[in-house]
Length: 267
Ligand code: LIP
Image (cartoon, rainbow, N blue to C red; front, side, top):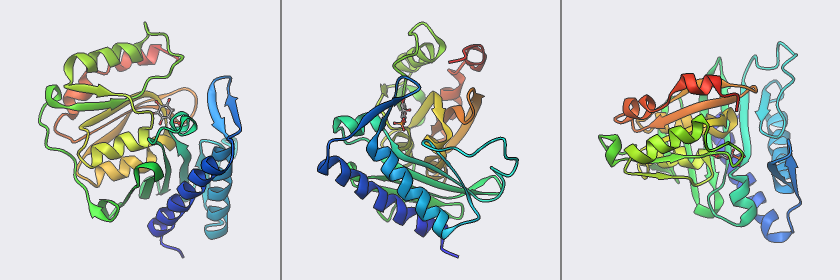
């Protein structure tokens, strides 16, 4: 049986290279899912590569990806080993030629993430971790920061362009902006959380992110000494309210998140 981390690391690297070549070599076909969620031809090419390699190497495993999720009416769909994939996290950045995008691949067994890889070709950073090995970036060990309080912390977040500014996610954003040293919106949740893992940032929060955006990076930040958690499962399936940090600022960070307001907000 192939080693899951080596497989995930190799596949994330190959997929990232394929996507970068696709953008360099041809005009991207752009379309919009659900009316506003950008989808490029490279997303679909990458999803096809990843699914094909997983089905060939691990035929009994299931796959959850941003571009093709399992049939939840099948009670077996989420049983057994599950690969959780975002072929391109930061699609809008990618389509504009901004460097902050990545391929994210995680694998879960018995409900626990056993391996994760996040590869950002344009920033030349490959993050990996397993449940029993510490996190690395390009093979070097990484660790969360030692910033002790929120007022000295850089917080990464994201806000959907279609959310009414009067609604809870923006209220939470304003709380962070008022209490943290700085707030940054860089457009890729997986790379944001990996920046917490390598100490360049100190916390991440987003309401309305998806499981495939964060599955690999959650293991990477935890195995770098940080803390990460789903604060609330939002509709539709796989949409979550998620926080990650260096651990030291975690309670300050999550205390600014009014879950009850998010529970009333259907997004
Ligand atoms: C993106 C996330 C980002 C979020 C964007 C988008 P995608 O994922 O990584 O944090 O703010 O709205 O969801 O769609 O580029 O894979």
